[in-house]
Image (tube, rainbow, N blue to C red; front, side, top):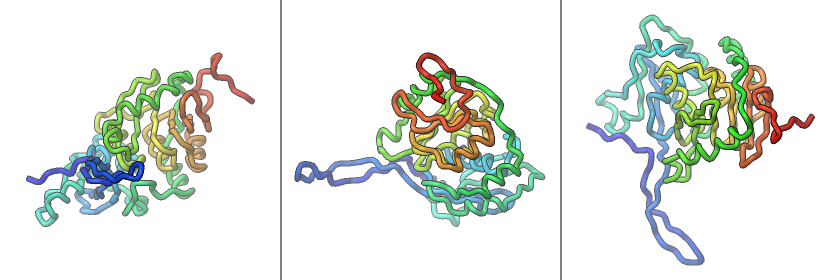
Length: 286
């Protein structure tokens, strides 16, 4: 029986402080490749650098976001590789996803994912057009939230980041309800992987679409973050940094409220102002 790779790796580091050198034990975020294979096609559809943990959810969320599966029932089984020709520990870096009988997905759009870094996937206007062609609906209006709820989200995310606390080198995606209550959180060396894990968890629990939820991601909002949020029906997407121009385009087209630079009691709203309640502390300056 092989041991699964942990999400944290121990390392000895030298600390230089005030001209003195000392050693100490540190924890690093583990980064290893995850290969996603489709059964019965025996085809590798993606290799992504990720932090081990919630691998099945990551695979499910990725396949859902890319349109390979549309419902929980499209996935019959997810398992780790059992091929004895593959080196022991590496079997937990390969996930087999068995699709339901009769499902023949279009795999051509997945070619751009054959090897993906943990930092960002491949973006572009062609990908936006592909999102349109998939027929993703505009997200329904609502819910509306107060600025105070949005202000409170980063602290709740950080408090729940157990691996980040130990390593200091990890992204997170957190799911909240419209009252700001934390529903779920996933961590990964790649922020889009963290969101895939979050969406995959909802898919496997038959909780999609997430039409009354808020997502907060660490780092910036890229095209892929908005693509995945669109397919999951998430109406409010927040980040602690800036969005990309293509992310704003996706948010505007599919009715998402996009918030960036969420820090302290301040944030920017790029699209979807109507979901923010205007009160004495929040006034539109037009």
